[in-house]
Length: 192
Image 1 (cartoon, rainbow, N blue to C red):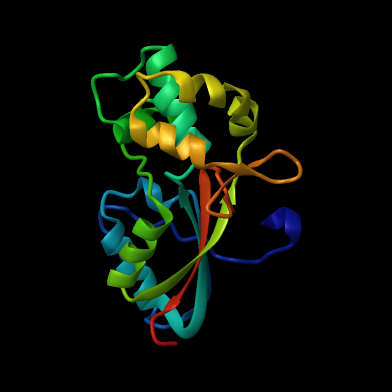
Image 2: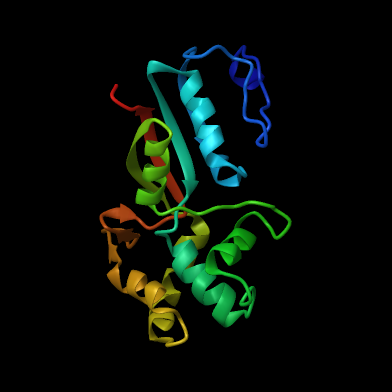
């Protein structure tokens, strides 16, 4: 922040006790990129952020996207079937181990509608703005056809890979949005 001439105070919150020393309805804008999918209780964190946000404030949030090549191609196919890693745990648990390292205690992944529903139950209206594709995912795209042909790949993953369309640059789309790991949302207090 000093590099950009920003004079601000940094406050580090605790995920297991998400109460920040700020007044209710005192914050205009909240940005959370790659944080909420690592907290033990997302509902508590969202309720605290809701408390802090002004009635006309807004949030931008990035969480891991289940509707992604990372989840359906890298983890389901390459990580588990080709490399034989984490075949004894659920696909979501294998995903967690594949993203931030095996020592990372929590790395959740959400379908866009699933995250929208979580936001709604915590007082927000949420809009899915799309997803960003990592360079790693872009490099994986050529494995798609081998994965689809592999009958060991669960049907859910094969159907996802079959449903993809591609933009003019060859980037994969799912339901009109990029099929990348970083799902981006805009949140506002409900009924605002």
